[in-house]
Image (tube, rainbow, N blue to C red):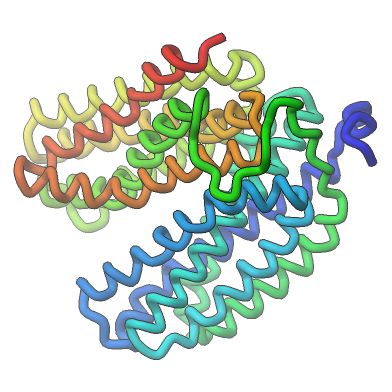
Length: 393
């Protein structure tokens, strides 16, 4: 089926195939997290060594993210996504059999590299589907990833409780996932032709021209997301007086509103337009978190401060929910080759996700954690300036 022919009839099966790919990607990623304490205990790792090992997936992703765009441009995002999905699930198996810190680091590096490549490729196919539809659909794919990650977390938790070996968990989950995705992947759509002035396919996709502000905005958004994941509970417990149970409320609320926002985000993006939606939503998320943190500071440690901070992170989740998918979709519409453009913007985003928690930790050492958390507010607000100043047409 040619791209022009596909545009005459909405490719619902292709949309289902892309959604399934996002879901199983999230499920395998989510299923790993509950098994980390077990791996730590089995290998006798200290907190510091485990922390170094957990940097490996992000480092691996930063290698393959910019490479994946050129791969998709040469061989098509459909075929490339299909192959990357197989490699991703195979790459999980060595993680389960790692015997020491060195082999665990290497296994996690390869695991992250395969996940990063799959991330770019499935987003490139998602943009192809979105362009054929003629309206936003990419946000819903990211929502499905979040739901898949939640499902995977439940699977990993149950498997850990039942004493199921991690290798068995990965093997069964991978086999079931591929049995679901590979038959559907035959309906992936061919990518649209490259723009006439696109130039040669880059080997290593880096942001240039109109992609630079989008990549910086993606860096800011995922820095805010990654820092919230790692530091919100610490803020609530150590600085605001929350108990062990309540400490996780901020990230839980953040995750919930982010998922809900992405589920309804396609309608918002279609109605408002991507650039306007980014400005409005990112700005409102930054204002919401700023208000919550300011009120928590005024009230002082205690239930009132905890409630204010949780409310702030709740609004932040809703505010940045559609921002990253919108930035990726905008990258695919800049007139550059879609897959390398997505790779360039994604690389900026995942670099922010990787370094954000470390930056917050460093700032908290020289100031305080409540002060350092305000960097999240600044990062959430940054896309408002970047998108308005650089990408408005």
